[in-house]
Length: 191
Image (tube, rainbow, N blue to C red):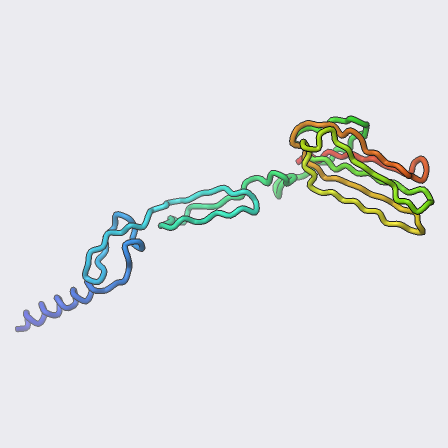
């Protein structure tokens, strides 16, 4: 009788263990089996291993369902409109402005113009003109024109990335106070 009690206890214990668990096939790795609720279940969860993905800055990536081994990573690609990066330093080369000067493809330029107005209360007019504006991406366009006692100071600057080589046709400035009251500066920024 002792043996029968021991066997019955062991069978009850096995029965309880066989009925234990609440996992579904999708929660068990594909190719692996488990006993759940007294039934043998074969897993269907996909083994993704080490998932890696590169996304553009500001982009998103939806992580796929499945098992991941913890070695995957998501990396941001190089920013197409950023200058340099945390591991790079910028160098700035000031260029002598001339009309129709060449802007090189793939380079960044800071183009600045400043003028003082004639004493007539009219703000100077400043225009930065490119040979082909489609070849230039203007990242920053700042136009600032404060006045003091009806004498304006007008600043305009562009931070541009040149997609394809083009010319800076002209920085035109009109309605200025006198000789020496204007400036045109072109600086190339090199990461």
